[in-house]
Image 1: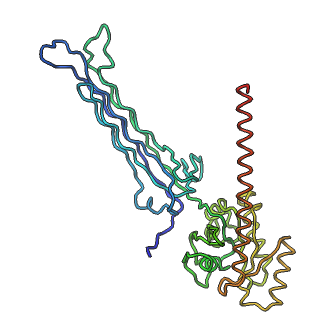
Image 2 (image 1 turned 30 degrees about the vertical axis):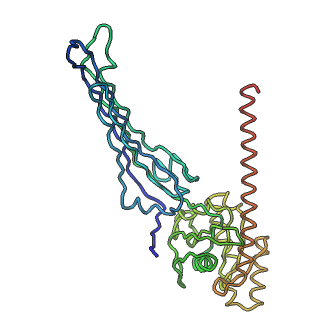
Length: 357
C-alpha cells in the first residue's frame, strides 16, 4: 500500500493569464477597394480556480509544485477572428481547505462541499480589435487594444480535516491504537510520546452506519500557544462533530490529565469546549478492578459526565464506544440540520418582507 505524506499548510504562488491582444486588420478582397477594418478581439486569459474534491486528505502535492501560472489568451486575427480563450488551471484540494491571503489572516474562502469552486485569480480580458474603433469620421482605424493583464498572488492553503469524531488526549493516551482497532487505518504506533505527528483518518462501522474518525496528534499544556505540536492541530478539532477524550488509565492523576486538555480547548476557542464529548479511560487491561473504579469516580466527579472504560489493545468495550459515538454524531447532525432549516426560513422571511410579500 502506498503511504501518502500528510501536509495541512502550504504557501503557493498563482498568476492568471493575460488577455490576448486585439488585431489591426483590414478586409482585402478583389474588387473591394475599401473593405474596412476587420481585426478580431483577443481571447481571455486563463483563470486560476480551486476545486474541492473527495478522496484527498492532504496538501502534499503543493509541497512539490508551488507555482501555478495560466496561459495568455490568443491574439485576435484578421477577418474578424477572435483569439482563443486560454484554458483555466484547476487546483484540486481536499474537503475542509481554507484559503488565506496571508498566513492565518484574511480568510478568502472555506471549501467544505465536494465540487465547490472558487476563482483565485481571474484571467485578463482580451483587447478589442480595430473593428470596434470604426467611426463616421475614421473609417480605417489603425489601433487596437492590448489584452488586460492577469492577477498574481501569494496565498496560503490550510487544511482542517472534517470528521464525525475526533480523538483527543495527551500524548501516548492510545489514540492511534484505538483508531487502528476500530477502523482499517494503520497509523504508526509506539510506546513513546508524539508517535503521531500528523492527523490520521479512519472509517468505523456500526451496523450499516459509517463514522469518520480523526486521530489528532497528542496535545500538551500550552498547545494553544504552539507548545508541543502546536495550535495547528487544534484547528482540526474544530471540524469534528463529536470528541472522544481519551485518557491513559495508567497515569497517576487522570483528573489532571482531563483538565489539561479541557483548558487547552477553552483557551483555543470557546466553541471547542462545548462540543459533545465522550470521556474514555483507556488501557484498563493494565489496571486492577478497584483502581479502574476509583479513577472512573474521580473523572465523573470533576467532569459531571459519564465515563466509559476501554482497552484498545484487548478490544474491551470498543463496540459500545462506537455505538455511543454514533448516537452523538446523529444528534449533532440533526441539530445542525434543524439550525440550517431555521436559518433558511428566517432568510426567506426577511427576503419576502423586503419584497413586500
